[in-house]
Length: 189
Image (cartoon, rainbow, N blue to C red; front, side, top):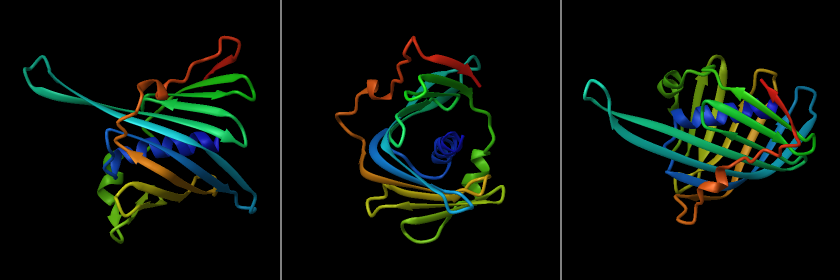
């Protein structure tokens, strides 16, 4: 569940405060430390793609639709894939041979996070939202480098991005796919 909350946070928070490229790919290390000091370390890869489409609505007004697609591929300590389009979250746990599907609600107000985000230094940002403080660090090229926060279960969550590549020309759309093994159990959340 902590992984799910982290992924939801990241997918939602990145929509709000930090300018992202059309796509990126990166390795990540995630550390979750509970209130008793127990540490769980995760490692894997993240792929992201942002698509914008402009269309004319029935009132003859131009509107833009933006979709943000994430795929987290956890390699250790457990093999799992997590894909989201901002509406649905799909978690494929290969160790458990299980697929969980969730509908993402609007638990975080994107506009409010954007309004309260403050630049601390040229690379550090802070947002206080619903009594949770989020600290974000960018590298010297303004690419996402690190996110830290304490979740609702008092877990300290730190995600460090390594080898970040923004706007990769070799980015392939199939890197965002989460194929479901037909033999896996499916749980609707």
